[in-house]
Image 1 (cartoon, helix red, strand yellow):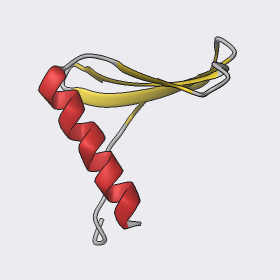
Image 2 (cartoon, one colour; image 1 turned 180 degrees about the vertical axis):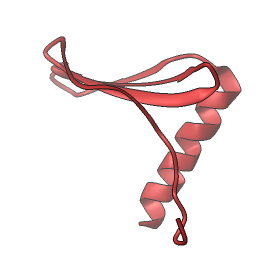
Image 3 (cartoon, one colour; image 1 turned 30 degrees about the horizontal axis):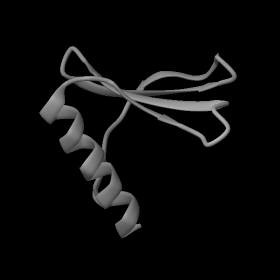
Image 4 (spheres, helix red, strand yellow; image 1 turned 30 degrees about the vertical axis):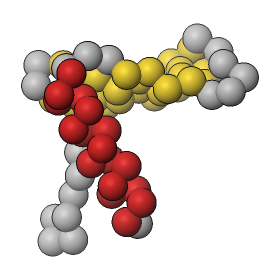
Length: 66
């Protein structure tokens, strides 16, 4: 859980610092995850072989009391 939180925090800081899209691609190039800020809201999407698997969705972090 701690690794997931730290990874999400790192992605959040990178996204807001540069305000540009970040694309992560699988080794075979078939799966692509995109992280971007649109109108101040962090979003992510996933494509498989150039087809949308997950449309742009809000990305956030919820605490234990949420």
